[in-house]
Image 1 (spheres, helix red, strand yellow):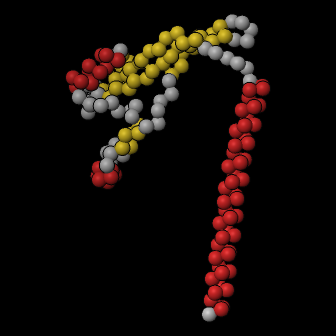
Image 2 (image 1 turned 90 degrees about the vertical axis):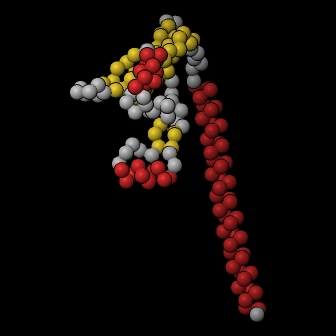
Image 3 (image 1 turned 90 degrees about the horizontal axis):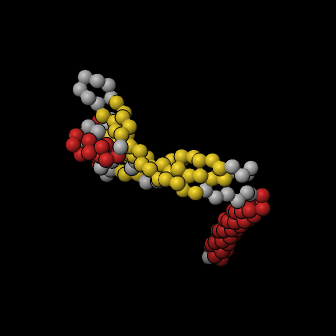
Length: 155
């Protein structure tokens, strides 16, 4: 009986030591991450150049992808209202509309001159996924992928 008690005490003591070591490693990793964040922020603020840009215009540009009978698939740039009207008229299975948002900004240069640039707004990473059953059918039938970025398909 005494052997069993010593065995259990040593076993639990070893588990506790391993847990303390693991938590210590996690703490050191968190500390290192926090210190790196503080260091990089300080270096950037000390060496960085302050810059600001003026938003001049925000615009949407759309492309409609469709196929006319007897022709190859075409990708046509058009105003968003027309693209969505075509989508509504023909249906979502026949027309795919891709919408991109652009911003025109003006920013000062170091020598005192100004530049104007048109940049695309970064898309969100949300995805629209179908159910698991639909996913299984999709892989069997080789249809479109299970998860499609929300910017790829418009509904």
